[in-house]
Length: 289
Image 1 (tube, rainbow, N blue to C red):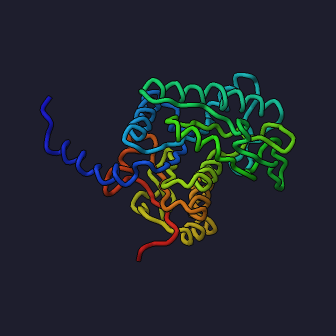
Image 2 (cartoon, one colour; image 1 turned 30 degrees about the horizontal axis):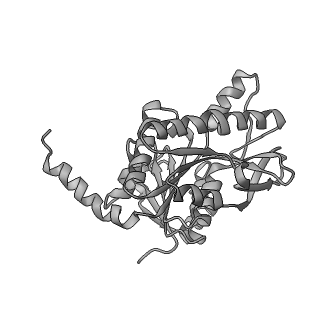
Image 3 (cartoon, one colour; image 1 turned 180 degrees about the horizontal axis):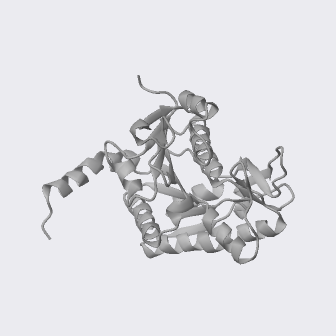
């Protein structure tokens, strides 16, 4: 095979990033519509394995909302949401746990293992990884929780022994009950607790826009103060809010950089980490200028 100069240039451009992030923890949130395409899922698994093989220590946190809704409808239950959160009665919680901690989690683990690494699937109930309490609000959402504590010990042990943790967003409540927690929020909390170098949120849009839906207003870098203003001003809304909140949580917990990237684009993880320009929106504590 004859390699072009452009291909060689890509490898050379990646070298300083490989050196900089070798041995560092990177938390990746993977979910939503970015998980629906089988070819994309295999591609993400290979990208994670490549990161692992060049010395990085990835942790993957995943959701699975579309798959939960699909199974609910097959079982005769109509999904219901309030402010973007799924109303979760006891039967729905059983479906959530079945999908997230079972089918979805083990499917991702199998893809990573098949790509040549060693992945282990976990839910928040394993080793008390994610403790939560019932989320309180104007509307009773049932078994929907918010994170109260992260126990990173099992994650650090797995990383030390060369495994890639794959974490579903099912947490354990005060009385041992399962709680459905937003996977974005879990990713931000875990990134802060394990001392990650990066948090990467994979979604199905290129990043954050100054005006919702207007591609000409794409923002490549945003600081925490401006992100807070955009949320309060309604410029960041709907499902993007928990993603930005997760980035802010990670940054305030000591993570240097966070990113929101389009997970429906092939190899978006590698483009964000190993190129000079990246492809998404980077959120930082404070802007340089």
